[in-house]
Image (cartoon, rainbow, N blue to C red):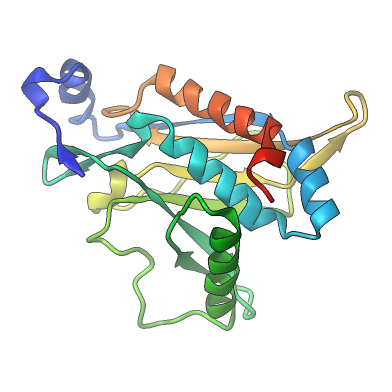
Length: 217
């Protein structure tokens, strides 16, 4: 990561204005087309979750603003961010899980499945939900049982508030368009990410989804 020189940064005015808001984060929910990814996962008998996790992590890393973090009142830009996500355990309670992102899809898929399998056995009461010393992550969750139209994230009173948070719902078949669609919510701090880069995130995610056969092999 590298430290941003605030005084010579294009986001200075924006950052200094919004960082002092009591609630400086906001979220947008939009529908995305996951038809190609659904088709590929069914053909290859892949689990949908790690495949979409790969696509969305890759896409978010392609938008520089999503790799910005506030640490001890300083702004840093990370070279690469990794997925941290919720997993439903066998006890019916969610716990947190993470693994490293890499461009090699097969390696990422294998390591994601292994990480999920370790967490699914039950909630580890001795483990913190999030590593408060680590900022090079995206926080993901999903509600695969329902199709929602809006969503809000509970926000902690700790240094991780500048980490982007994402949640997606159940993918559903649209009989009018003959396409599979899914709700995706992205929440960010307005001090680092305004509407333009957030829009770029949705567009980049959709672009990679449309080209899913290039990445999910």
